[in-house]
Length: 55
Image 1 (cartoon, rainbow, N blue to C red):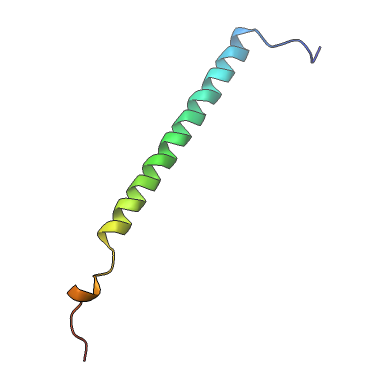
Image 2: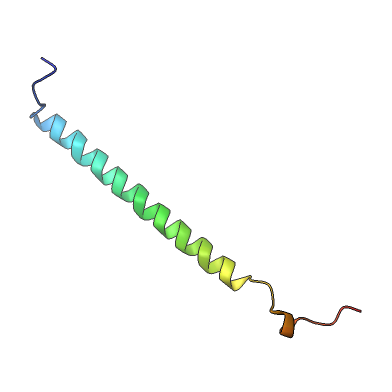
C-alpha cells in the first residue's frame, strides 16, 4: 500500500501547493537578503579620508 504513488487529485493538489509555498519562501528569502544588503551598503561607515576630525 505504501509503494503505490498517490495519483489522486487531492494528492496532486497537495504537491502543487507545497511547491508554490516553497517557491514563495525562496523568493521572500532572496528579497530579504537583497534588501538587507542594500541597507548595509547605504549605512556603511565613512572612509577615513572623509571622516570628520575628532580631536
